[in-house]
Length: 296
Image (cartoon, rainbow, N blue to C red):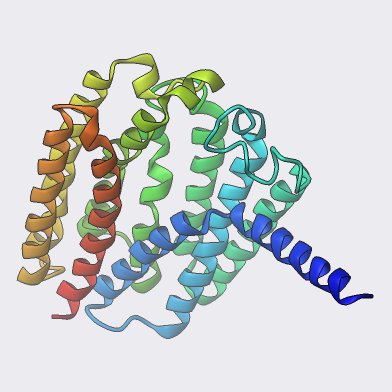
């Protein structure tokens, strides 16, 4: 093999590896796992058991990544129609579609075993439930049927804090439920901001996202209502005694920012991209304050 051929082979391998990793949507997975880890720290009021942490980090990543791979398998037809997704490896034919399905199922089977063995059965069951909601409720049933798809299906992305809490305590309580609700209520304004920016894609693919079937103005008003509910629920962990004033201050400050940018978005589309970007930072920082507030 010549030097050029060796370099070409390495480049092909790297491209293939990158394609398979992209099926799992690692950017989204990292945020989901971070919320689970923060919930573990809050539940333990400090340092959670190391084996449980490793099980949640690895098992949670595999389960979420596997669910995303199954989503890529099922949505390959509409992904090929959308500018944002048509370059993904399955629509372009760089990966056989069945590979994504096999990876998704295999990852979730292993994740369930790992969490059941090294955390507990409740954490494993909740992780599997998140995958089932994402695949069967959101991807297969609701995404192509109703503009409420992301509202109901968003429950899947709100389960990781429950997994983290259950892995430490073996149960769920009001604090854990409030963390679930924070993400559940945050999802519509976050995702609808993206949907407004790529509404043409969804329209051409026949996906009834809220900005496609209703007006931008209606979507923005709905988003503002969900933002108010998100901020209100985010204060619950302080009042249950799970975290201290550091978290409360962070939640109030971040919540004020979320309400401000969501309110500004009501005035025009020029704030929509800012809302989408801020919503990601809001969630990451809120759970960082959750962990910090529990420790302090």
